[in-house]
Length: 213
Image 1 (cartoon, rainbow, N blue to C red):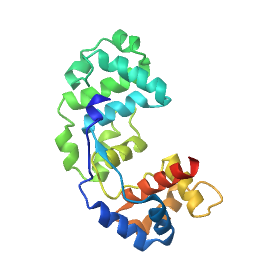
Image 2 (cartoon, rainbow, N blue to C red):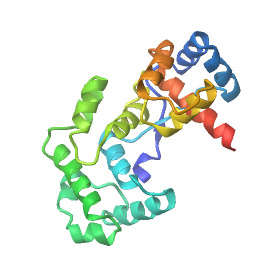
Image 3 (spheres, rainbow, N blue to C red):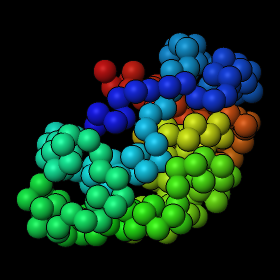
């Protein structure tokens, strides 16, 4: 998505986060050593990021990318402003490959932003739990998407996405668990990582990627 190509660094000290989780947890120390520098990057505004999450929801990468291109083409290759999205006819969204349900999710997102209830600036100023509460009020947005927003758009330092399969699987393998950990187990294992659980989550994703190469 063109509007998300410009990336930026998290607003917290990446090196401090890396050292902290390596010092507090011997398992993470090995993962950090194997994976190298902390490389999480941020992109997009909250509105753009949520829009893209909805476009890609429950779709394989290639299919989602094709729908994304057709969707953006409706607006000259850029992401639409909320009022532009609300003015788009349902049949035009369907022609771009969006289901009726997914179109309703995009309209819900646009309504929340067009009405001023949500703004990019407001979301950047809310604490984590309030961000989760606000964005999950949008149709189609669940806790996992809210966690991804906190991690990869807002750059919050202490996010542990307990519903993410990759983090769960990586944690299971790294800590020698017999099955995928439940949220309570993940919170217990991740307690020493505070206040940099976002960095630990990134390293768990990266470690899983390295094991499957």
